[in-house]
Image: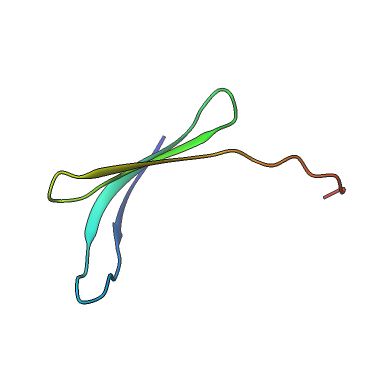
Length: 54
C-alpha cells in the first residue's frame, strides 16, 4: 500500500487531498482519493493483455 498527498487545478479552485493506492491479489490496482470536504473517489484499473512482446 502506498499513501500520498495530491494537489490539482479545477477552473478557479485548487483542490488538494490525500490518497492510498494498493495492488490487490487479483492484479487490480485500487486508488482511493480523499478530499478535505469529506468526499472520496475510488478508481480501479486492470492491465489489458498485450498481444506483442514487451
